Length: 258
Image (cartoon, rainbow, N blue to C red; front, side):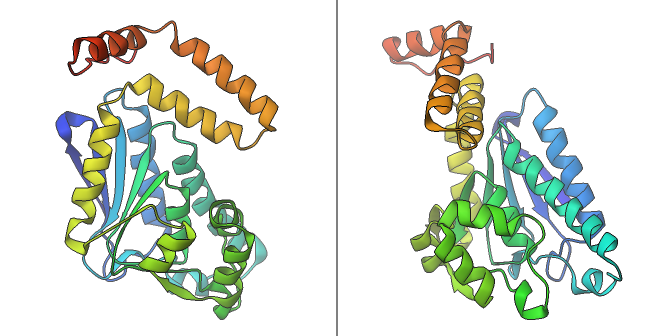
């Protein structure tokens, strides 16, 4: 259900969700995707991951209606949502960047996975939405928390409370996605971005990710203290010395991750 490819000499992973017809998030798909992402995070040679969907209908179609229909108790619902939250938190907390390459419809739980990614590339033809409220429930994979943090409370309420589906241009306007491109070029665009990041010092990338992630949960003064500490750690690395020398020599740096 998850197709895995290794690109760019091993530094860039591509995970393609392949669960036709709508690439829905069944418990088995969530579990398999979570294990692949954990493997990516723990692989010493990996640098960037791209997450996309197979086919031309959906990026990720959300939780299958069949799974929702099985919910008969509060505990059952919580257990299902917890699986999704754990997946999205693993994505969001990764210090290695994870890029969403949205090739088509991105709806419900698919939007919540999108929100957890660090960079979002979208087809100009894609559509986005959180339609759960129209079916009598609500987002459960983190949408009520990550969406307002990304696009603001007003736009989050609009999408969640109205259950609207918006097009890619509107998603770009409100900051839900970062890059728009032709449908046929979504993965290629994501690969180009991933390669640029993979060429940078891995320690610098991961520490910058950590500063952004953890700093958002702190006051500005505490965040600045965190930045100082991480900057100090970078200053004693071989990668910093190599990067500076490569810049002075007008050559590509050979970073070692140490």
